[in-house]
Amino acid sequence: MDTDAKDFIRQRIEQDQREDKLPCGVVTRFPPEPNGYLHIGHAKSICLNFGVAKEFGGQTFLRFDDTNPIKESEDYVAAIQADVAWLGFEWSSLTHASDYFEELYKFANDLISADKAFVCSMTAQQMHDSRGSLTEPGTNSPYRDRSVSDNLDLFARMRAGVFGDGEHVLRAKIDMSSPNINMRDPVLYRIRHVTHQRTGDDWCIYPMYDFTHCICDALEGITHSLCTLEFEDHRPLYDWVLDNANVNFHPPQIEFSRLGLEYTVLSKRLLNRLVEEKLVDGWDDPRMPTIAGLRRRGVTAAAIRDFCSRIGVTKQDNQVEMNLLEFCIRRDLEASARRGMGVVKPLLVTLTNWRSDAVVLQGPWHARNESMGKRDLPFSGSLYIERDDFALDPAVLDLPGKWKRLAPGEMVRLRYAFIIRCDEYVIDNNGDVIELKCTYFPESRSGQDSSGLKPNGVVHWVSAGHAVPVEIRSYQRLFNSPSPSSTSLLEDLNPQSLLIDHGFVEPAIMAHEDTRFQFERQGYYCKDDSPPTASKQGQPNQAVFNKTVSLREGF
Image (cartoon, rainbow, N blue to C red; front, top):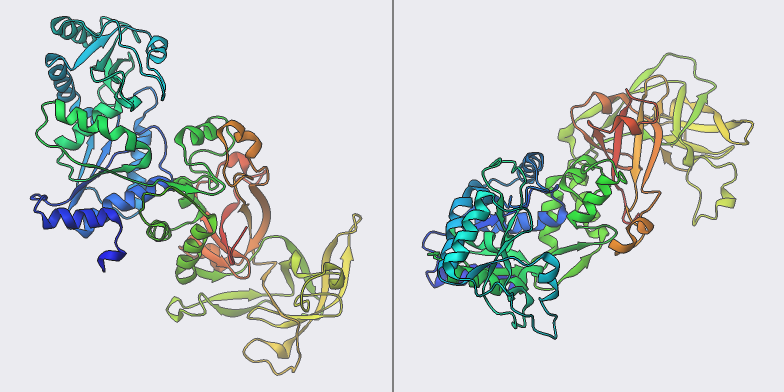
């Protein structure tokens, strides 16, 4: 690859190699907090950290930043591991920040001994009020000049559980007049009497992220600490901790732009709110931008990796169009998904001149991939077609060009089958068409047509006596706004983000072990093995198909 085509991080790694700064090779880490499921924004970081390590023959740590037991759980740990593995990446080591609690405590004591940290007994509100602003300096804590011996004693008693939550914190002693607010004596440890998912009740003080992750990076020999741009203002604190604690290695922190995606939110706090308030059916709801939700929707790992590659790595935050993600999904499924026929909104068709038992036709699983073979298509005198493929009066639809589907007196070809003509239609008490009575032409069989007839177009179908009833879920944007706001989250929600229909699919689809299919003329769909039973509208035993993406661009 030409150097000019590489992003700035890969260029930096190549420069470090040329300058012999990497005697142990490239070592990166992906350090999620186990307080929720990963989303597609995390996928960008995963692809970057694991990707550059693999490209340069290095290794990647999967490290859980488990320093806040109030919000964290082992269920999230397991879900994150599953997502990273599903995306196609292998970690060289699996670690936790809690693995280093004893070392972190020692480094904190070293800072206290060097008079670079102190125990502060101000309340959270008092600390907030004394912090200052972007234009005004902060004021020193009245406890800033405690003696080293007093601070060591208080910190030891904090660990021993003598004090209650919020009574004391450990703060770095830096500069309350620093123009960077993060450097104004930041908190390094706080008291929380909460059982930790891994360490139990061994600890009641927990280190803050800004103190923890830089030391963990150093202990693990991370050569390039890659993080998103919101941590750029935290880099001076990252460097201060490593420069002032007795750490033998100092990794560089390098920031890149985070992913912004239209019509969704990529904040764990907001995603958690959607789950907690039951505005979606859990973290893996197919409308969610989580890796688990995308997987249930039928999106492939290859499509997500392609998407992350296309958006690239820059220093400029940007909002990516949803159409780019859909393009990557469609591009992958176009090559890999088998074709089949599914009718989402069925309309009954009766062939009035059908006089035989069902016959078995055949259709290719993929028109451009013969290796996928063919599937059997049972055909009978009772069929379902798509309701939208029939119009009483096509002229009133105001469509460009000629109507290429079925209408009274008109003909269409049934895909891989015969030409039919609509002779009559049946209307119910509401004025809706509920059945078409049609003539089929035996001599028009696909591949053997000698009829000379010229049908309007081709429509898909399923044999009514053989079709499998299924629930079909179609998804629209989760939010109506391209940039949903945390202050108007409920107002921005799209009430039509999930549409449920009861349709039919050909039996070969249900019999096949594959889960992803293109419903011809409809879109790409995925068989859902774990839909919420409560939302299945009285059909608990019915298979569910989630619509992954349409056949063409746009919602």
